[in-house]
Image (tube, rainbow over all chains, first blue to last red; front, top):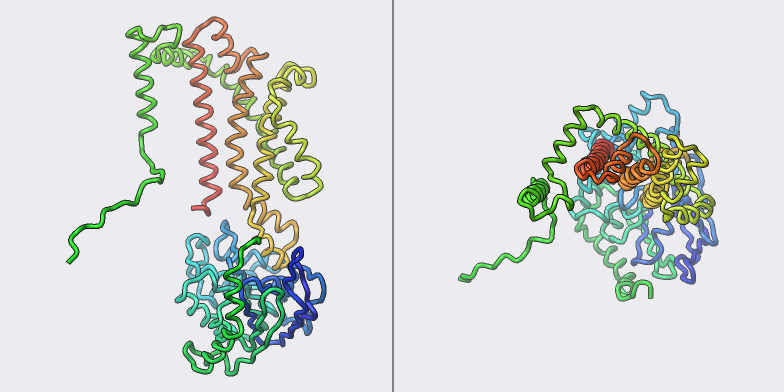
Length: 255
Length: 262
């Protein structure tokens, strides 16, 4: 499935957060959205999945979702959004329960996604017992369970430490390699963007506009940290964002 | 080589469990009163001897009078607070979920909350009769208001991120309420229950003082009228135990239902 955004504009009060944003996300490709804080990238992502309504403009979806897809547009949230009173398996089963699937099918799906995210041994653990990285793997397993056509990832690795982030990036690349999904990956981390994005959209700060869309060459699986070509792209991105990031840092909240 | 050890200056400002301290304070207090009443520096019009109160309690238990007073009280508390708490949780959840119900009922609840419910007892006697009905109604109304306030507060405090997550996976409205909102509100509802039940016990005694033949409240009132301090204090001890017991029971329920909080 592919997504397109046309002329998206949105205000919070007097503040324009998104100004005439247009993007195309082709099927089977990951688009990373980067930008300084306050550029409206999370707002954009919420609009892509229908969790927020834009003032002007529209989000369009095209193509048919894959067979067995229960929830075409599926999110992975920064704060994991796991139900603390449900076990790992219970959190996955939550999103299957409303679909009236036969019990053995539900069990099979849960087994499969937990195996794919290497969580099979932790199926009965509660979220509070898990590390941050494990929690996000549960959230990813939950997203995989509905066999999504498009994954909407909202800074999924931001709450994690650097080593865990590295491991989860490899996991995400592995999952994409195994079954390429359409993805929108919002992050403020440029290293993540160059590792996981086929293309990277750079948003400007307030009002959020698309400044540039950059193609990142090379298959995801062959990208390594420290690759000079990727470093060059990252430096270019940083050049685009630096002044605005500085301005964002020096702004008083609520001023 | 540096040779001065860096002094420790952290620590403190954190409540720590100190086992047995509570009981020690309690025992010390009882001991002081016992000593004072025996030695005479506490007159026996001021306080009864703890040992006499204990003897009175033992007598009560032996003669069976304890049960004739305790059982009606317990059933009033159980029926009244069951009515009040279940209505309170129901209305509280509705207030939490629907803006119109909130706009309509929150001011009403705020108006009812501060009324001393005991003042309404004569009215309840006319409405529900002098028997059990008026006592049930009084306890029900008294437990209802704090339960409503605690419940809608708890529903309001459920993490909106979890609700958005549910919506983003296409969960139905009823599924979101049942699987996300209600379990998320449970801790707040249970802690509100502690307050509600304590208020229930206070109102139970008040209702029994105004018109009951049997019951802990009636027993205390009779003792007070005769200035029988031993019996009065025996009644008070039973009430404290009732309070501690309900609080302990809610603690048990919390432990069981909220394992996930750790």
